[in-house]
Image 1 (tube, rainbow, N blue to C red):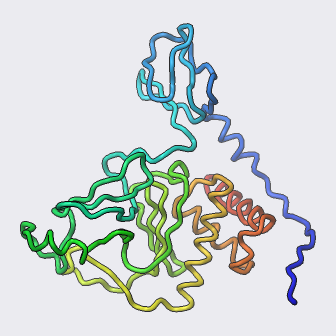
Image 2: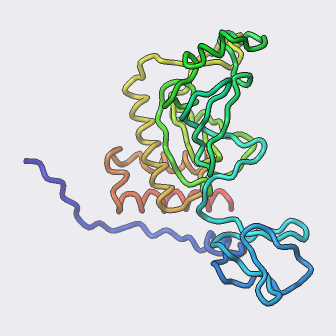
Image 3: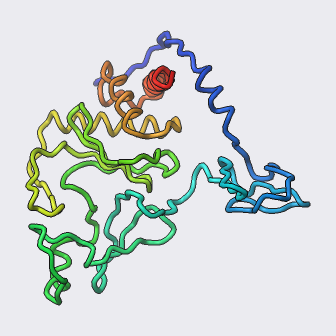
Length: 272
């Protein structure tokens, strides 16, 4: 009978003094911490007034916008903003709309009029389209680009960027949803421009692509467990750092810590 044995090894020493000093510049508070006693500031979300002092009501990072002060929680449900990229799962089909789970306090709504028709056809939606809504999306479907893997993480770990769709050089693509849902899928080949944005691939995924996606999935879980900000560069650095290890070993505590430390070191070196 096979047995999995783990032996102690000498860990590589990684200097993170510069990254720790960078964190010192951020105002991190816990409930009850006094943010300021200046009465000229306005109270925002995550704060309250206590004896004319602005005090934090949640644990998080202090954000200042002109005279408005608020505290962004480190761990919370997703609060959507205009322009956010989200990955969601259909929970209910209603009249001319779908209800979508997007990791927020309430289910989101996807209107039938907002869905691209196959072939990119532009016309008003008819009663026939309403009757065939389940042919497009039904309960349990993930709004995605075909086959792939969904990884659920904290929304606070997703770094806001100009684009959240990335084709990684390792052979897979990633959608970093602002709601904490991350979608991994094989990088598609040439897409028909006349499809109008409607694209679904149900072709078999090769073994090499599945291995790349599985490695990326474990890397995301490792970065999430160590509270590392997720964006294309950090994910790629973590993937490269994990290559000496087998995919199944990435989530072992000692291997996970080594990979994440190497990733942090590369990010520090990149920032100079």
